[in-house]
Image (cartoon, rainbow, N blue to C red; front, side, top):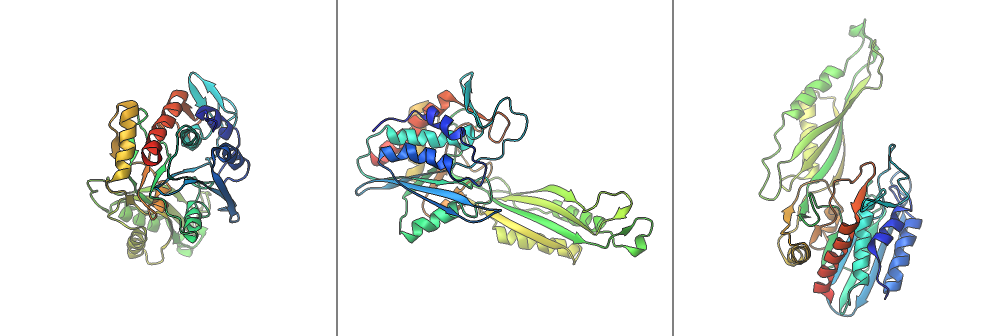
Length: 376
């Protein structure tokens, strides 16, 4: 078995564009790395535009009885945007950092875990990769469909590590043991278009929407828990279909997001927002999309494995956190305990996204410590 150099593999993955939803060549690169390590690779493409087509990969290396440890991640990336100092999809190393879209979120971690799989002597159990091409998008045909694939075959991992970039100031300082839920909503207030000089012939929705916004902005959700911060509602956009200064618009909309802890449920929040909006203005309409529910992995073996490996390799006792954004743990938690741990996240989704070459190597060693303790 030929050991994988994680930075080299990360560079190869970066150099294949894979804007969400992703499929094709970037999965070829990962399969070519895993197949010589004894992994049986399964790939499947699902869905149509706009949420698809999405490719998913499930790869197994099984050596008889024993635990099933899974690594989960995504090969899709957000669009690079304008203003990069070079080609976002041509990986390069400058000043000890690997630069390119996906270096931090999260091709660097996928390469590190592949390197870990190539550098330890697995003696029992099952090691698997659960890799999607749609984590950065709506995940309609991504990780939930991987879960369906596993359930159809009665395959259930005992624990899952997700390689999202969780570290804050330095590698190993933060492990995510849960994630907040997320729900997006659009509040639409209908009106009647008309000329501003003849308001009696129109119905201006803007003032009505403003009253709804004020009511929702003053809504108290909760005070948080020992594991989670308070849930928060943030308005992310206000719009009308016309920008003309002499036209009363036919409608007005407010866009909002709620990040919520495990005291809340997405559907209940939608119902609550709808009730408040319609109490202010009965004709208000609320459209929603729940990205995922909040989850928390209770203390146990997976905590101990990850924390112990980090302490052994770095000397750091990591903070166990539920802050930040969502991850595919919101889906995978239905299978088994899940934690997220990966690279420092300062550059994710930014221009000139990058990861320290040293950190990628050290992350591979931490991952190796973890799987050795389970399957070695």
